[in-house]
Image (tube, rainbow, N blue to C red; front, top):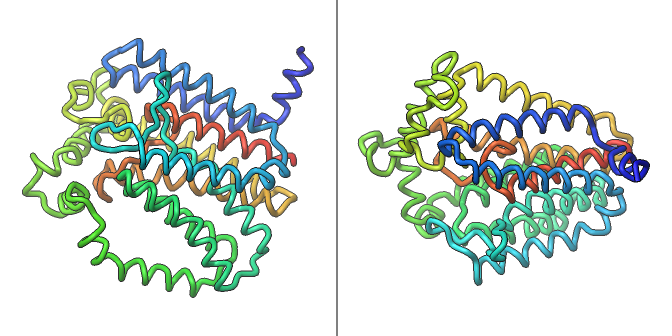
Length: 357
């Protein structure tokens, strides 16, 4: 029995494990504070964490052939689940993004953060930097299909982040820079059409509120409150359980998408630095595993997964600081949410499985 457990844990990377565990402990304290010491929410969070560790250990025991053989299946399954959401999804606050199985609600768009990088990595590996118009078109289609399904939920933030991730992944894996430049030009050119026909009114309001400060108490309320929370923390913060903007619900969604504001308010600049240090250790360790890996496919997959992880952090922190419009992107491993946590921990299980393969 002990030998079986040791065999299962052999691929666990200590630096990644300690970094993730530190972030999870940090998140428990933050969620406990933001929920006004709600034990039930903490209990649910602990269950999510336990499932996350199990999932991470499970994926850490996969082999290269498992990813290559199952990449298409995972991708197709993800899109089927997204289509089910579109047909008969569970709606929360006007967004139809979940599948309700009575005993659990989960968000299929999060699963795509695992399946899409694996599938794209397989394609890049087989193309081996030998791209032509037909191959690039295939990759675009592979990315656009789930992006459209996610946009229809509606979830513009996740949809754009998927497209953004795919462009960066292709750029870093040798695609012609001219193609990237043309893609960016086409994207910019499509903005007027997108604004006129594709954006919902509330999405337009969020964009306008970034520039129109006269509408602070209406459309720009949440972003205004997030800035107050971040700025009021100062150097050392107000102290644990002492954040007024977050604990008294002046700032909505303070334990999910806007939990970064709670860190700034209660722990100040020092608390933010601690978060950044742990994130940096985690990301740099994964970059190290990618650079010094002996197999091309492993390098591609590790880099693609960690790029996706970094983009989530970048978008969330930019959003709560008012640099970009508000989008539904959680802060990885910190924000409350079961599906996001379990998928993120699974991603790091995959990365750990590739370090010795």
